[in-house]
Length: 527
Image (cartoon, rainbow, N blue to C red; front, side, top):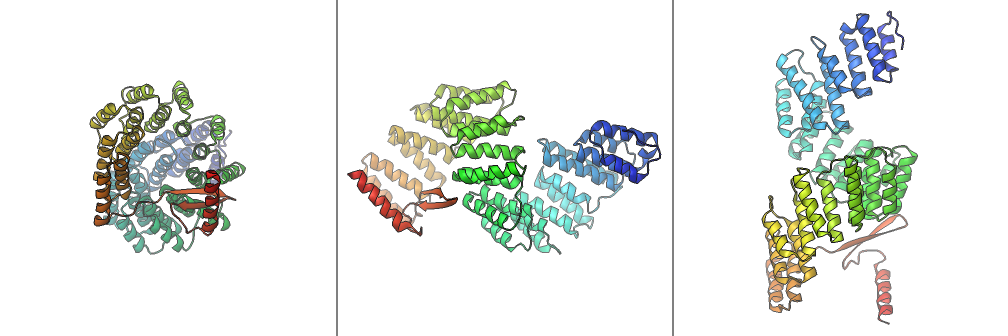
């Protein structure tokens, strides 16, 4: 790349925009240095932004910043923006967030230049990745500096508080906004959804005066995260009908919903859309496709997507291992795990949940115990409740109840419903009524008003012929007004429409015909 020493500022920026590699950038930087242009902070500003945002070369950008004697507020903003953008796009999010906060603290200590309305939102975005105490601290500093009157800062604070479930603080900031834009509405919708208040999120979404793709993604993700999978798919249909084009975030969220619902046809349609519109090349979409095909039982499709991925992340490996484990392909799941280790990919907590599930479904007790030890001693991963649940389930299914109880008593964390539920399932398989009684009573201690557990206890006693105990339980249910047992639910997809059925349900518009058909089937089976 040849650069004339007489380049004007406009020509310099034009040449910079045509750079495509770091070598080009370094050549232009050298030209700026030789020509004396590098001393100007406007030149540094353009070089820094190009290095960080276009070439994703954060260390080079930081060297440019550190070489500037007295950087102005625009250079601080550019460097903070580079850190925040890198934190959102890379696995080193925490480190980049700390880099941004260190730079912001340096700015405050030096006193000049002072932060402005563009600096505070960037610092708040970095603080969101570290902790709510930092968000509060920056909020306090902005208030003392007189910058809290700016809507852009209030919106950043709103997003920060909502990310940590502090919805009262977030809502107050939202209500105090002079002009509410789609960003502030979306931040509050996302906050309610993350806090599990998906009903409030939906109400707020319906009240939005205008929406963009990010707003649609917020409510679709909120429904998916809170188990409203049918609603998530339905909102996608509304989004498309309104003329909005789904992006990679939309696709990955809806693929997750399709996987949970077993809606393979719609999942395939979304797969075709992703490839046709070229949004299907990101890791989130590829992992979503593996997960969707796997959960829908199409393991060939999941494996085909996996084999097509050239740069496999840990999440990609985990998705395939979990899919294989879910469908009882235990040996295949273990083989994929060994393949992953051979390629030098370090497993994490999610990997071992899938691996231990595979051992449980395959009845590989010794292998499961060996992997449990491997996780702790070789990979230095502390077991979480899901790992303990897998081990208890593994030992219980094998009838090794004494070992299972030893695991529970030696757990470093408090046992919960996952643990005692796993033990109860094994007790029912092996008809260990006394131990089943213990497991159910532990479950009732955790959730005394859960009618499902009360019904289980009655079933255990009835299986053992202890009818007097059954009578006492039923009497206590009536006297203590324990809530109704949650009905079982199933669904089926017909002509791209999902039909849900609950136990004893007669609300479906075709329920009469459905029950007639079931009666006919039952009669034919008796014959």
